[in-house]
Image (cartoon, rainbow, N blue to C red):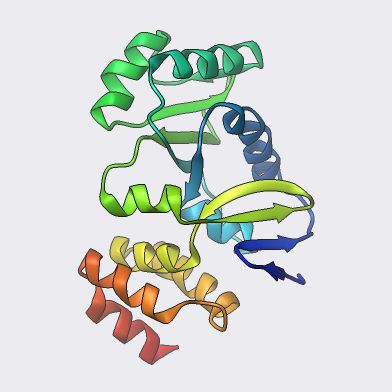
Length: 201
């Protein structure tokens, strides 16, 4: 897999999996209504890690209920559905506004699904503003920075998360901003984990 870099853009081509096509279809609607960023497990899958995932984690900006209603209506008209609740008002007021995730899937299915929510922390909000554009076979996806990805995976700490961190680090270690990585790790309280991680790489 040959990867090109242009400033804050990563460009590459590869065979598209079913999960890729699911994400691409969803983002075509999402990007019309929201500033967004894809985080967590799918990012490592995007760059070739061979593992399964049932959900795609996404942060969106809070652009108000009317904007959400337009997004909700277009999704429902395009054969998607919300798994938590049918009411747009309840989804916005009882889930998103309370920093809880809403889950979205193709109608009649449960997996894969999108887990979408408003940012919870300052670092979450930073991910929305400081991100990367990926062109996968000319399909545009917005993802968290690689430094955020590695640090958050160390913070989560499961074996699967650590393998995700290793995968991203191995591919992009010559491109990572180490100072940025240290700063994020320090904010997450995982500097010791990061130092140990880097020593083992």
